[in-house]
Length: 160
Image (tube, rainbow, N blue to C red; front, side):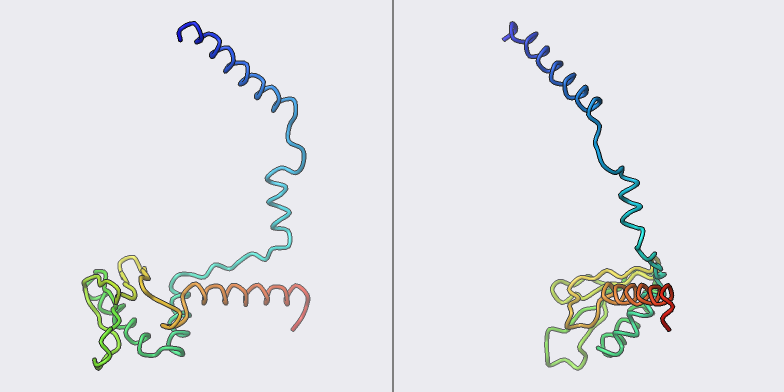
C-alpha cells in the first residue's frame, strides 16, 4: 500500500490542477449573477412589506367575517397574553356537547391545539389551524401583496 501513495498523491494533484486550469481558461459564458438579478427584477413591482401589526389587523378583520367565534377567542388570547406576559394557547373543543367551541390555556395541547400567541414577541404560532377555521395570515398577506402590485401597475399605466 505504501508504494501506491506517491501515485495516488500525484494523480490527485494532477486532477486538481487540471480542474483549476480548465476553469481559469474557460470562464463561464453568459450573464453574471448581477445581470440575471437585474433582469429578473426589471419589471418586478417592489413589494410593500406589511408591518406585522398591520398584517395581523387585516387578518383579524378577515377572520371576523369568516369565523367570529374564533376571532373573539383569538382577541381574548392576545389580551390574556398581554396581561400575564407569557405564551397563551387556544384549543379547539373536540367535545361537541360543550357550550364553547374554543378554550384558552397556558398549557400546550395536542391535537386540539389551534394556535398560540406570545405578546412579548408579538408572535403567533400556528399548530392545527386549518382552512376550515378561516383565512390564514399568509393568504391575507398574499392577497394584499397582489392588490398592491395591481395598484402599482394601474398607476404606472395611468388607469384610474
